Length: 334
Image (cartoon, rainbow, N blue to C red; front, side):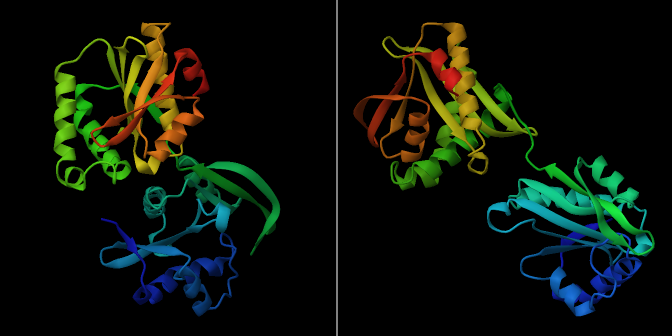
């Protein structure tokens, strides 16, 4: 069984036993074959590089690193390099490390992975990366000085790490995930608005009870829409038609998991909620309530053309009624 863990300073000799023979071939890596041991290991274990080792049967059989492909405004794209001990080549270790690294890069917050120089003649590696979803986005002429073939071309290969977001109508099977996301969202957004004791000790159970009741007593004028990434619920919206004789349909809830904010998921949930309302009643207007102190949410709704219709004093402070007289226009603006 292959075990992958972070590399540490005591791994230096094992790392060098892998790195040295691979560099010596001069056919895949841009590092010179005569790169000093200390220089190479200092790079592999440097603060700006996150390195890993793959262990099998008590020994290190492979290694790879993750790092920012570019500094500053380019640090959301990962770069990586992989080596398998020559004695263990062809056993699928490289593929396992690559799969692990893609998940790890996502966990670390990278939005894409890019290889800046994949030697074209290294056909085995090119096929591996393509099988894992990488695309060749550029071919660089004579970019690599091959030890035996001379100047050869190299590829730039790239893969997005952002999985597509899908949307669907919620079912009773979603209750626990919806309630958990709802509770987390309140804990993050309503601190200083709702009592700490409630947010810390009661909100999870209270939200679960609310959503269990909603799906037990389903009504035709309520629609719950969820956003998912690879089967994981990352956002939801709940809308109720005919909620107010003057202001029409109520957007009762709209929440997106924190790591997924900024990807347009809230807008897409709004759009789908508004489109559903329009299907039920083409003339319906659309409204919601938002706490006056919830400046982030207010900025989002302001950006969608909301009208701040009125303010009332609620249990936890002033709440504002935001309205959209034209639901179809709201859907289009999203």
